[in-house]
Length: 206
Image 1 (tube, rainbow, N blue to C red):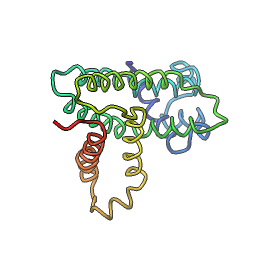
Image 2 (image 1 turned 90 degrees about the vertical axis):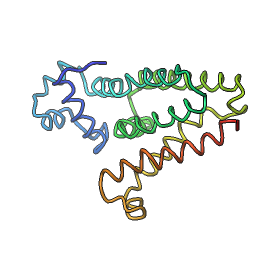
Image 3 (image 1 turned 90 degrees about the horizontal axis):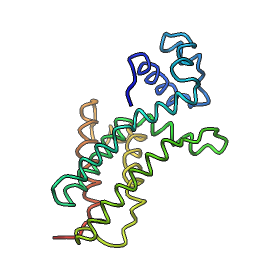
Image 4 (image 1 turned 180 degrees about the vertical axis):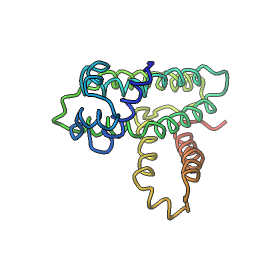
């Protein structure tokens, strides 16, 4: 999904405000003020605040399935590809952690008026691709049977967001004093931990 420069500016500002104040707690007027544009421009490009959030979610997730398929279609072992898939999920969740926060907050709100139809469709497509990949690995006797496939992605999400929401603790415990140190911890320690743990659950020993 392509956005022009002005649309991207609006999406980035809205994403920041939605993450900080919630969807209901952010007005179109606030978005326009923060983006230094007039309200009519938001209506022109997106139609409504609800449609703006929908565009935001689709934009952030639009190329993930392509990246996932690229890994799945590689000519390498199932274990190697599974490890790459785990790394991809961590990287994408980290890159788009604000949109995950927004969506999960709204999905847990029983009074929400948003359906997140496009998000749920894309999530189902990703889940189906992962399920098919693991099923093929089972057929080739590289993956174990009786795997709880629906819990793989929540395990990755839970591990990442526990770190994300408790950075004060992790910073002091592991001396993560700089943004670079945090990035390194996410891309190495968290990724490696998840690869080791999930491979132990999923992969058959050679």
